[in-house]
Length: 603
Ligand code: HGY
Ligand code: MN
Ligand code: MN
Image (cartoon, rainbow, N blue to C red; front, side, top):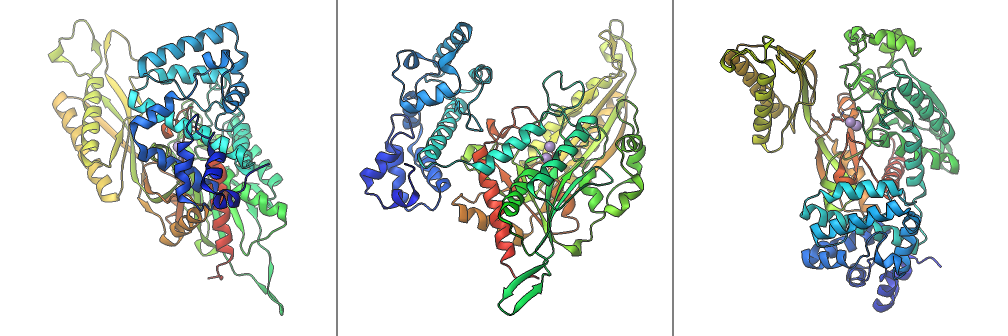
C-alpha cells in the first residue's frame, strides 16, 4: 500500500523513520534525522531534507554511507546478500545476467575503483528515466569515472545515492513522474533524427534546415497536435509554432460571461543542436510547456489566455553564422544578409530555405507585436554544475550573460618546416596559440567572465609546413555589457599586439553581439512562487549560456527556469542528461505559473 505524506507527517517518529529506513542503504539515520523537518508539503521537500542531513553530516559519514553500498554485480549479488532494493535495481539493469566478459570487466572495474578511491563505485543503475541503464552504459560510466578525482568521485557517489533514494522514495509513495516521463520520451524519440555523417557515429547533430532538422520540425509539429494544440504550423524560417487557445469567454460571475482580454503567453526554446550535442539543450523548453498543454487539453481546461509554444529552428549558429535566427525572426532581428551566407558545402542559406519549402518573402511577417503578449518564459537545462553540486532540481535565472562572438583568421607565411629558422618564421598558428592563452588569462582575471576559442584550424595544413594561415573563433561573455565590452576590447588589442610583434596579419569579423538579459522581476517572482509551492529550494543564479530568452528580452519581459543537469551538468556533449523526476518538477512549476497567471486579473 503506497504511503502518503499525511501518514508520514502524522506518524510517531519510530514508525515514520521505519518507513524511510531502506531509502539509504543500511543507513536509517538519514531518513530519521530528516523527519525533524516535518511536516513535508511535497516529496521534493522531503528529498531535499535528506540531502541537507547528509550535506551537514560531513565527509566521514558520507564515506561510511558509500561503503555501506554493495558493488555492482559484486560479491553481495553473487552470494545473494543484496538488500531487496538493491536486488531490484541491479536486476532491472540486467546486472544479474551478465555475460562472462561483462562480469569479468565489472569485477576488474570494481577492484580498480576500490583500490583507487577506497570505496565502491556507486551509480543509480535505474538511470535518469527510472527504467534501468543498459549494461554497456554502466560499464562506460564506470570506466569514465575511474579516471575521476577522489573528491569529485565521493561527491558523485553521494549524488547517485540521492538518486537511488529518490527512486526508492517514489516507489514507497507509489509516485511516478508521469509527465516527466512523457517529456523524457518525447526528447528521446526526437533525438533519433541526426545529420548525415553523425548518425553513423551515434552522435546527435541537428543543424539548420538539414533533412534531420526538417524531420525534427515535423516530429515536433505532430507532438504539438497530439498534445492538443489548436493551431500548429511551421513558419517562414522553420520555427514550429503551436498555439493552445484561450477560452474565448469565461464565466466570471452568475450574471454571465466576459470577453477575455488576457494577452498571449509566449514560451519555447530551440531544437537545433551543436555538433555531437545533448538531447535536452533547447528541446526541454519546448516539451515542458507542451506537457502542460497536454494536461489542460485532456482536462478540457481553457485558460483566459493563449499559450504560444515556439520550437526555434536555429539558435546555435552551427551551419550558418546566424545565432538566434529563429527567435530573432520574431523580434524583427532577422538579418537578410544571412540569406547569402554559405555553409561548409557552399550551400547558401537562401537555397537551403528554398529546399526546405520555406518562403523567404514571408520572413518579415514573423515579427511579433509585443503588445499582444504578456511575456516570454523559457525552461532550459542549466548546462553547468551549480544545481548538480547543490543537489537542487530547479534554479531561478536572474540574468543571462552578455556575449560577443567573432570568427577570425591570422595569416603569416607558409614555409619549409625544416629549413626556416625559428627566428625567421611568420607562423600563424603560434600567433593564435599565444592569443588563446592570453584570452584564457584575461577572461579569468574578471572572475565571472569567460573566453573560449572553440574552433581552431590550419586550412590545408601539412606536417612539414610552417602554418601560413590559422582560422579560429572567439566567444567572450560577461554578466553585463560593459564588462563584456572591456573584455572584448582587451582581447582584440592583445590580438593586434601579438600580430604586430610576430609580423602576421589579423582579420576579425564579429558574428554576434547580444546584451545581458536580466529577468523581469514579476516573471522571476512567478517562477519563485512555483518553487515555493513545490517545496523546492529557491536558488537564484545567472545564466552563463545564451538563450532565446535574450532575443525575446528585447521586446517583452522574460524569465527563465533552469533544470539540473546530471554528470556535473555537462552540456554541448552527449553526456548531457537530466532525470524524468526533475523534468516532472519543471512541468509542475510551469503548471503552477500558468495557474497563477490565470488567476491574475487581466492587465
Ligand atoms: O552558446 C550558448 O550559450 C548557447 O548554447 N547557444
Ligand atoms: Mn546550446
Ligand atoms: Mn540552448
